[in-house]
Image (cartoon, rainbow, N blue to C red; front, side, top):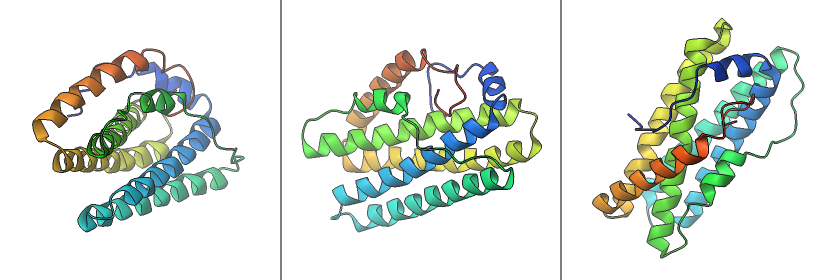
Length: 192
């Protein structure tokens, strides 16, 4: 569905499961950042009330996911750590074009779509490979949500830009992401 060029090695799930406390804290902060990103996009698109409405729903859903992960952390007696730097996301951000307003907005939508696509793929890997039954169910539900967010962001990009140009740019994003993801998959973080 996402056309990601390089799938996550299933052994990453073993790394993640080896430190559930860390993966949950990192995941919680990823959800908070996703909510913040949706709100930032809202500030760029006040003239599109339908898109703003959808982005508000995404921001609220991401905050709900943040809350759900935070509740799991508390229930398990884990310490909720400080926000983590996400090197993967920071590397992706370098690929955002700084051209016209339209180009920038479209690329920010594709940036968001890429993060959702990879997160969804990682949640699928967790669902299929960890032994923790509660987290298997939890990540399966989130996987579906992330797929919906991916579809929404790609749809917005195509709505706001020329669909053919957006499709070509998405292919460039896929190639770029395939290169940087080679360095990841060895840490107990969602994108690590």
